[in-house]
Image (cartoon, rainbow, N blue to C red):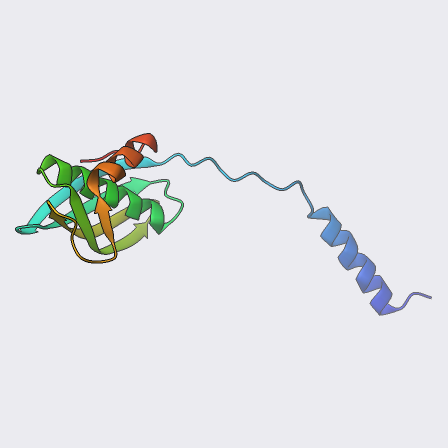
Length: 131
């Protein structure tokens, strides 16, 4: 006679095997960049507002803002930028970033500095639009 434990184990094994499928490949990354707005806050302090759909996470939005900052610095005749902060929010599939950077002609102090030319080239290679 079958014990309840044996029957439960067989039932669980049967249910578990039904749910096994081939591993899925990750969905392709197909971002839609909705645009960049800039606001000069004070002299060399610039606020970047970016929006996109299809982001895999906040780092994609942060990359978009960094690309905008790099191109903005180059347009203004500067070679560098320093990241101060980025806030990211997502609602209904739309990701928004609110980033603040300083721009400068010389390499600024700090840990989160970017060489605008190098970053702009990387953005172009990765298909991330800029200002």
